[in-house]
Image 1 (cartoon, rainbow, N blue to C red):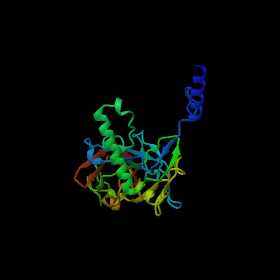
Image 2 (cartoon, helix red, strand yellow):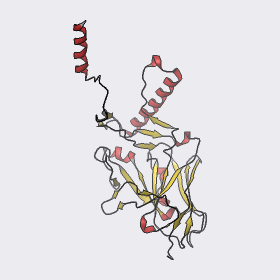
Image 3 (cartoon, rainbow, N blue to C red):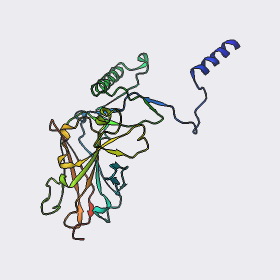
Image 4 (tube, rainbow, N blue to C red):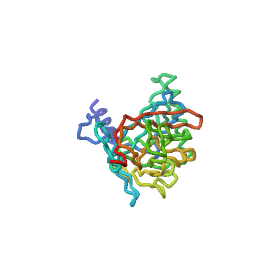
Length: 280
């Protein structure tokens, strides 16, 4: 019996198995990432067409060195006025919706898994693998100790429009399309993959903690001319920076509408925010 216990202990050591509980000071296990894109999102499968929208200030963009920094401060005090010089931006995302996601699903044991769950997990993995093969994202081969959420939309976007509840200036009356007054920034993981897992040419760098392992290629363009319909596999979050002050100081509410090529409309509305006008 003692001999068997000794042999089993040796096997555990050789296999690298640790039978002791992991302490709080022990780093998390290593995660192997065969692909760069960690999930795909099919917006066509989402039933709730509500966008998550928010407003932030203090957004840093280095246009000389072409660097985008993490988002600034979330606006929480809506009683004060904010100026364009505070780099206001509207954040837009569909990340809060967990429907239509395709990513690596652990299969576990078929014997102890519900047959319907097993079948669905097989389908999700099959779609995920087929998309990775389609764009050639099969040789990233990096390791981290954290889960990195690099995602891509597989549903074509037709239009991305922002409107305002009041006259913004003489050229843009109430409820008109003011998208041309915004510069939009968003991740372009497809271009990163096609650039050999490096920052794509003519893109901005994203200055985040994992940039040396997971570099991001950020698109910077005017929102009105972004041409989303011809940009495959883009990220699922957009930062729309306001470039022009309104004529008058007032409280403004913005509505964002993202329309898919099949006509489905996703919509979100900001809280009213007081913006200093050109007259102040």
